[in-house]
Image 1 (cartoon, one colour):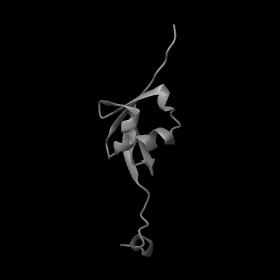
Image 2 (cartoon, rainbow, N blue to C red; image 1 turned 90 degrees about the vertical axis):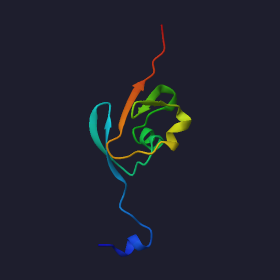
Image 3 (cartoon, rainbow, N blue to C red; image 1 turned 180 degrees about the vertical axis):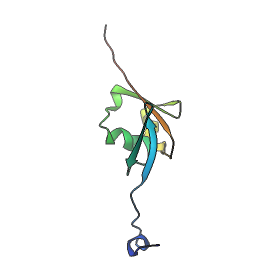
Length: 81
């Protein structure tokens, strides 16, 4: 059943179940990898993100949409000696 708001272009938030570092989680209103990183407060220069076993450059994050069942791996980059 449609509500009046749907006819005006308002939709229910985008809720998707994904896997992050092997743990199932649901994220709401997050449509791509860039939004996911921002949602979790990840600093782009300190992490490497894999999306379905493909390592992404930061510039690819916004062009990588999330879908039900996607697998995300977040690896913290540490330098030192």
